Length: 214
Image (cartoon, rainbow, N blue to C red):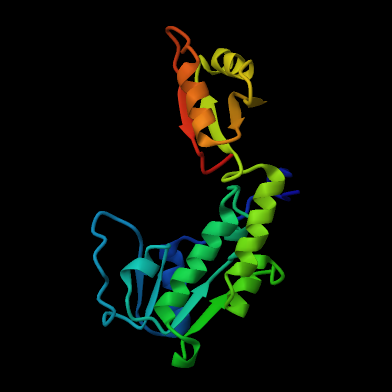
């Protein structure tokens, strides 16, 4: 409980790119360049500094890299997305490709409390199959894509539309607050069911197929 306001709500504070750049400059006593995604996504002049800090964009806009450090990688592993592990592995793979072969001297540093996670173990062993095999088994057990097809339905007319979908063979619908998760065995069955279901008149309806978050 906060001694000042009495609140029992905890907030996890993370420094932004600008603050992290300033702190790194002070600690390293050298220039640090921040790199984020923007309209000007050209390759960054890597002679401008020895240290770069940024979002995922830094892995795409900087070409000469000797060391890559992922801070608080747990936030990627535990992100509220069913593809979190897959996307975390993609980040590490991108960094590894930039660093080149191990004998070249490049180093990949990962800050994590989950050293036994399959993504981290795959990176250490240099074997993506460790992560992909575990991910395939998890998605199969939970009937997640590619072992099913999913859509999120929301809007004023979503409840009525979801009720009509629920009556169709091979379609399951689960309500969560003001959204409905629609699941089918495959994308064709899902698309046909959605196309054949009448839209509610004079009501807003939004359908998101293959949603990144559930």
